[in-house]
Image (cartoon, rainbow, N blue to C red; front, side, top):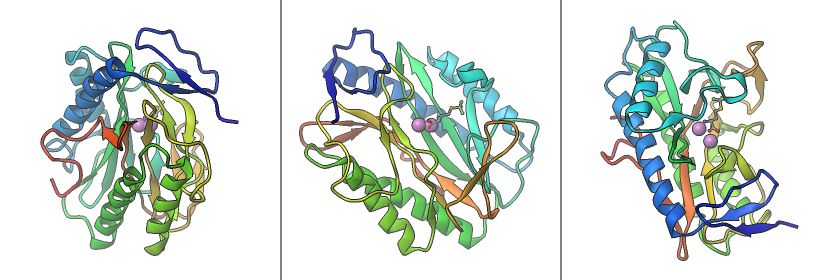
Length: 274
Ligand code: MF3
Ligand code: CO
Ligand code: CO
């Protein structure tokens, strides 16, 4: 049985498996955190160029997060020592910023999570480095479509599984693989909370969506098979078959009539070409 818990914005919340239902004040706070996440991702657009290191991008994310009055939620999270995740080409997610240099033709995901006044924004976008082959650009386009088709399912009375069903159908139509090992997640005062938002699911399955739920949708879509492998650094996930992988992520809240996307770009830079 799914348990829901109505909470006030000021309540202390526990990771107790319940799905939290939030009110207006929490929506306001999530709008601010989500907007900062989007502004940071906007700022990355001109910086993602051949020759830049992923650590240099991470430095900008950290500085912008701090300037925005927030803290990167990843910094110190389970021993993670960076302000964002940067995942290149066949890296599925949780790529660690380093002295690695971006090169012409790369596709890159940057995932940021500002913690602002106690509330988490969580969003990622793909960036194209220089001239990217059509096959890779197509994967990036369809992955963004998968995210938005998932978001289209989000309204009170729908089921969580409707999101994954829609995403899976769209990805598999294009013969892409939907990664199963990583999910979207509830968030708010907590970074990772119930429910798990799976990106390949049966329509009509899972908990009912109710007004006040906050969660991310963050499909990882592979040009090849869905299988992933962890690298020995304990964080980096890559495709087993070395095929390219793409991901976009938004943080959303369920409203009375549908949903609100907290992390939309104020400049309309939600997907490439930028
Ligand atoms: N931002 C990621 C997510 O979407 C989580 C990154 S946790 C880290 O849930 F420690 F790997 F950075
Ligand atoms: Co997330
Ligand atoms: Co994220």
